Image (tube, rainbow, N blue to C red; front, side, top):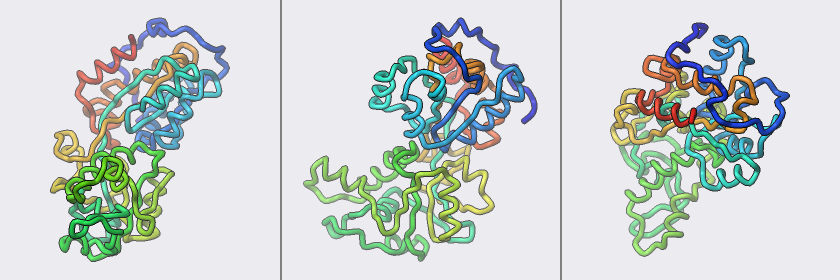
Length: 337
């Protein structure tokens, strides 16, 4: 990771970005915060950028979750606000409105690749082949039994389905400050509720409540990053945790991944569109800081270069699923315009 890999993306003059300086620069280090899924990728690029461009300081990368990153990003313009928000989901309308209200008007979205969301347990535990319906029945506070909604009666996975391990249900899931939680809800729990045949006659509000109200006895919500979830699994080997595929790939010695709908998550199954729980990854650049914070434009272009996030690039080796080159070209062109 000490080799300069910027040859595939030409530097663009700062004047090309068309953003005039909104504040006097007194900070010379790019500040980044947000998604714990994007954190390891962003950290790798920051280190490579610092080594490749000695004229710029190495960016500082923090976590805090997608929601936390957007809150910091949208606080305003100036030295005391971050330059980049990492995100595992697109920015919400409400977050964009908060940005606009605080003078952050030039929000540049950078999609740079894909990741999968996996369910993993202790490498020494049982094998899990799960469906969204089974996960819904494990996590929901109320589930349908004999056509009626009742308090969740399941204590062991094998009570949900005899094919599942005979071990206590325990789940560690991302808290609401994480973008992973929203994707987990949208692509696993909501379809799982639908497949579980909820009672007829429920209003839209009642269905939403069933889909989003989780048990308190067996579910732990993790506000920190994936290392905190991993620590939970270490403390209780019965726990099934939610991770990014890239994090799982880096911890295969201690984790065993679950099959979802008959598909094992991998770089290949996500890239082929076979694995059902995947999502694009992003970071957002504060346009008002371009031309003011040294290296911000160059860092963005470097991140999108072939040698970093393209096929065969450094980030693919770290678990990123590269996006098509033509998509990256469109993202770069939109950033520069």
